[in-house]
Image (tube, rainbow, N blue to C red; front, side):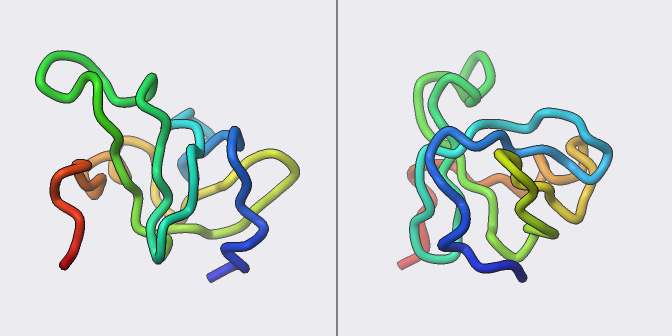
Length: 85
């Protein structure tokens, strides 16, 4: 896993297929917190989602590329209220 300190606010998060998944709001522990504007619609709207840092394949320029395609990575997103204890 790449150095998480290299991941900065406002970086684009993309799947292995190059498809936009979200925008970094912050790195919290072993998770990337996505901005609220990338949180989807309906019941998913208006709160943050998190992507497990274990999915980071590389940090390239202003992008965080994941090891999974975007359509697969989104199924592993965690809701804001499901933070580990």
